[in-house]
Amino acid sequence: MNYNELVSNQKAFFESGATLSLNFRVRILKQLKNGIMKMEDEIANVMKEDLGKSNFECFMSEIGLTLSEASYMIKHLKAFSKDKRVHTPLTNFASKSYVKKVPYGSVLIMSPWNYPFLLTMEPLIDALSAGNTCIIKPSNYSPNTSMVIKKLIKSIFPPEHVEVITGGRNENSELLNQKFDYIFFTGSKEVGKIVMKKASENLTPVTLELGEKSPCIVDETANIPLTARRIVFGKFLNCGQTCVAPDYILCHKEIKEKLIECIKNETIKQYGENPLLDPDYGKIINEKHFGRILGLIDKNKVAFGGKNNPDALKIEPTVIDNVSFGDPIMQEEIFGPVLPVLTYNNLKEAVASINKMPHPLALYIFSRSKENISYVTSRCRFGGGCINDTIIHLATSYMGFGGTGESGMGSYHGKNGFDTFSHSTSIVDKKNWIDLSMRYRPFTEINKKIVKMLLK
Image (tube, rainbow, N blue to C red; front, side):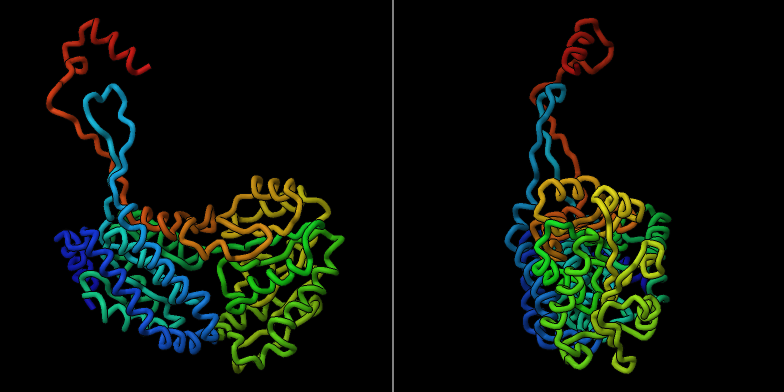
């Protein structure tokens, strides 16, 4: 495919003004939503092939959230698109000032394999809501889902509006050599650096949704059984292959044993005595990542779990005890069903340990102490998170989702997503019925006094 021609065609389609109409945007969002609902079973089936997800988990964590974002945008798009009137200083009399949301133009969306449908379609919905044209590049690691996404998009959009490019590194490289108006990337920090470097050559703005090690703090006041239940849900969903999964537990030393026991009991309750035999328990995406995750497990420190099935690429939920920040498992994001447990003596020490590491995409604290919660959430820098729960902060269109520092830049979901894919154009509309002379030469003494008075 000639990528230069494709991008040129999309730019021409955008310049025609076809995407600017509010009615047009709402109509295509409705068509996309209806198309997803019609293909719901097919989408779930291919994600079962790629990641082993059950149909319900697929709907709960991917299809359902995508439909929710589409519905939210359809409902609120008119309000988001309105010009926003702002105060006009007296120095600009007589005029009005407002901010106009203008789409960037041609957008590249590069999505990952761990939530291959959700993390492709949500940014697409936001970009289309803002009035852009889009080229989608899904991950090569989830090929079955990528092909269904391509089928879905082709059934609704002409290629000059939205196109899907499948393939691997060569295709990624060729696309990044094109001049887009905006790039939205979700994936690893290493690839994110490449994307940002290539974008800088054309001064193209970017959003990077990355990762890092998301801590889960459990203090001595927490409701331990409920804490364990919610940690097990957030950590082992999608076999731990979630960018905002709790990467490690940092708990008060006095509650560690009880917490580990409750996590063990809750894991058995949610996944059974032998998760490797559960057809609804997912798998690691490929052999490369399967081997990488196994290499992080110190068998001498396994509190429970640890079994695996290399033929099925499955690793059972595993908890690692007696871990320090210097252990190999703490040197990289785990991105798998392995949960190390570390302890602290006091909360100040815990926060200091977290702040020595790259800023995480998410942070979780389980506590009944308002003072402890305030201390952690005000002293730690992180993308987003939960108090007394895990990962659910991303399941809403009413707040933005994104990282900070090494975990990314920019955000999306709901209005944040609309704003991400729009440029805020500041406009002063000056009236013609009066023209004050004070700003024009020659600068008289009276005019100087008036200007000084107005600007102070």
